[in-house]
Length: 166
Image (cartoon, rainbow, N blue to C red; front, side, top):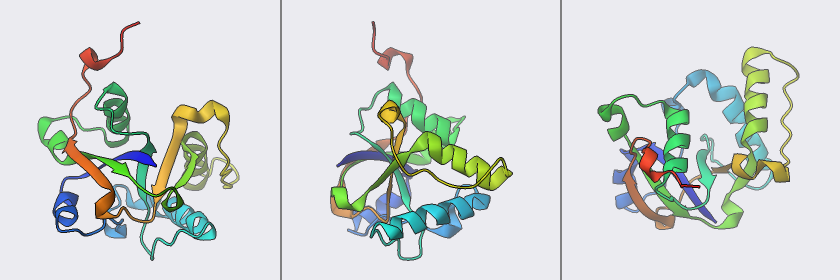
């Protein structure tokens, strides 16, 4: 399955030596999100995906198209503001075995996170994916084998010139 992910550039050293990319609880961007990440780990385990006690690696379906879609999604998730902040990240283009991936609705995931973290309602995740969510699907992996990385490039700011014209 073709996927792309944005990761801290430090992962490149691990991948270059043949190591796998795996999550680390100590490196969660927002530590208070751990309960919802643990829920994802639990669902992955129920589906036979063993995170080995670590958080999952998040990715997005499709190849790294190097277009505005990748930039806008990455910016929405990471909120980089300066060249130095962009320089911290790389976009990895992946081709991983389908049986290593749990796909779920990104919209439903955000609703679940809100319910858990803000007490906004019952905390139950609907793991189904509706047809209307084609652009709103996220992918979680227990790890990314180094051999599944097709390429890496710096994260670059959104560029209006990369927008498709009508």
